[in-house]
Image (cartoon, rainbow, N blue to C red):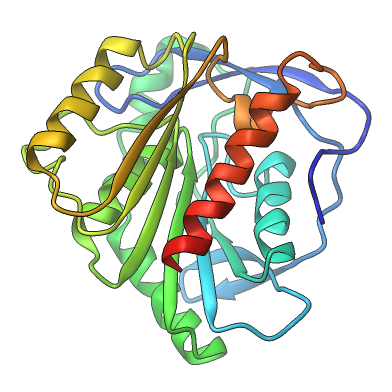
Length: 260
């Protein structure tokens, strides 16, 4: 089973995760990873699909960060989920629009984000749900998202009761009045030293969920970790972080196993 990424480092720089006030973050270690799935066309969007070795009626929608659906790191996570028995589909939620690039001027980021809102993906989600039902006869679906995709995950567990569980990895909605009324059990994963999502925001999230949420949830903070550690840090390059990377991935898998 997939546990850690392959050797070789390709450092770059990145951005995002708090939809109300995004700011720069480090993309970390871009993986030199070929992926084992296929690319398919789903109506107006493309998607990466990774299938398990044994036929399954359980699927995970994997939601990209701002670097898009083709980022090797995200496809690695989709393959990880597939290796644990899920059909993993990573759609292009930018619907053909250009993903963010490290060479872009960050002063233009807010303008770039205007037509790529993580809470404006219902049309694409409906296409993916239709595809999973028709193509695979899927009966249970969960969602996992990273950074921008973490915000999108938070959005989906508020709006789609057919989604059985969610794992939002360093992403949080701040400006929706109903953001604490989760409809599906949700795991929120954060890093203690995340410059994009300060701990005070995480504290408020957990407190309000305790007050208002009627489904199971967990808010977990990983000591010493920065934004992107679950899918943007490589264990072989960051050995001191490796236990936290592995633990977060296992938490994700255990949460999905429990509810999906």
